[in-house]
Image 1 (cartoon, rainbow, N blue to C red):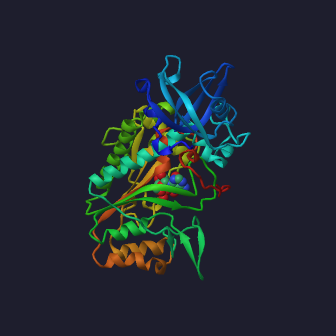
Image 2 (tube, rainbow, N blue to C red; image 1 turned 90 degrees about the vertical axis):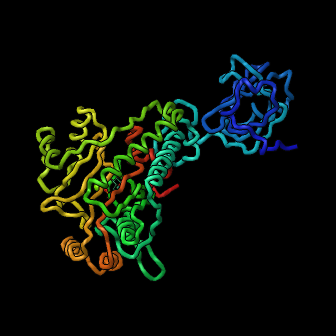
Length: 439
Ligand code: ATP
Ligand code: MG
């Protein structure tokens, strides 16, 4: 007779208070300790475990063998009675009267789950299904989900509408070389580098505040610890703004909401990672681009010529300076126009653009956008792009486009920064990079 899995009780919900109850549990065989007359088996569900006790005189040979002889990491269902036990982890154990092996794991395992040996990152990603069984890895993906939930909730409360824009597009949204070309029936198409042009088009619709948890596909050739070829981002756009300050307000409060949600809802996961999340106070400090150059001069080997984007070296030097001032998160504002894309609103030599930094890592870029169609067209041409590729994008600007602005907040970047992960690949289940398309 098979054990009814629908009656399965969640292991994290069991305790000594259930003493005497008949229960069904299910999970992975994590560890077997056979002492002869008695054996102890740890069954894992998620990141929790329950101890199944096998006093050889009290359980049938069949039940004992099913747990002791089955390979580690096999999936089993156990039906038995909860007993209070001072020695058992969690204060209780289960005395089984039936065991069913639902799926036997092959041996040897492709990687360890509970062993303390370090497995290299490639083996871990090749065997992600197994890697995520490890509490400290599972914690990252629960925290990532909480970050998405916290951000989404806050945006909804603030009246944002969630949109979904196409990922297959006819013209490269940001131009440039970092684009993936795909075959689209008889034509070629591109994977979207961001929903930039689409969320801007929405500003002409009356949906004044939109966001998307978007996918970015970028054929960036370099392999770094902070770049993926497929990444995710909170992409927001807001209409009827006075200037970029209104966008900074949204961003700083979104970051606060994300970090607060993780802090409040992920106590166990943070403990598994031995991390604390710092919820920043708002408003976040603003550092201008000119100040950033000034302050980092002398701290870096290669100076940044005015007009160019900050180098990675300068970004980290600024991160250190801000950390000394007790600021983990900060805005860099008033970038030179030359360093920013065509859709960013110029302000003389400067741009109404900003970045959000965290300890030297760029987490967000954003700006007030150009909403005047003539200026926009002129800037597209100056960038060397073909305006005919932007016809669909430009059209709404001729039929009632309010002033607007927005940003893209990298999801993997903020998770990586929040948890001090050494590499962005730790913040995504199945990373896509220069050398990896599988699994
Ligand atoms: P970087 O200078 O770090 O390469 P970027 O300025 O090219 O980033 P933006 O176009 O400003 O990137 O994208 C907005 C945000 O999206 C970035 O601040 C970052 O958080 C995230 N992001 C962009 N590209 C990537 C990538 N290849 N991998 C992971 N996250 C990314
Ligand atoms: Mg940027």
